[in-house]
Amino acid sequence: MAAFALLVVIVAAFLYFARSNELFAISVEDGKQRITRGYVPPALLGDFADVLRGVKHAKIRALKSNGRPSLEYRGDIDEHVAQRLRNVLGLYPLTRFKLRR
Image (cartoon, rainbow, N blue to C red; front, side, top):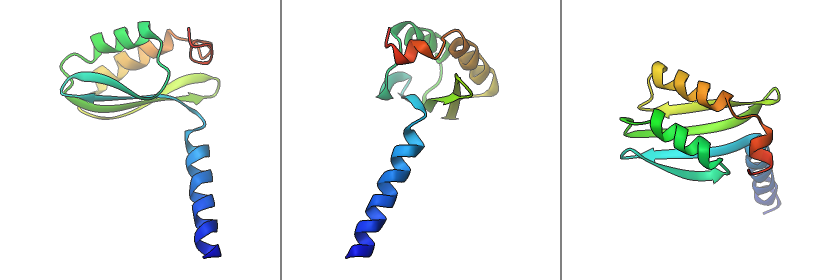
């Protein structure tokens, strides 16, 4: 029983630290965006909607990396769309996510 409790604590700590650098996560299903975690400035969400036109299914995560936001993505996102998403995200400094403005 003690081993199981230790395992639960280790898994919980891993999940906490794995997401501690995550700013937000967005899911795209049937072309519709949905924020699944975190805060996304409304203007950024609108800019992403423009870039993601035609994308049916995807998962997008923004992470803190070296003092600036970076992206992880998977799904129906080709390199052209990915570069446009990175360009749009680059317009938003990290403070925009912390202050929730």
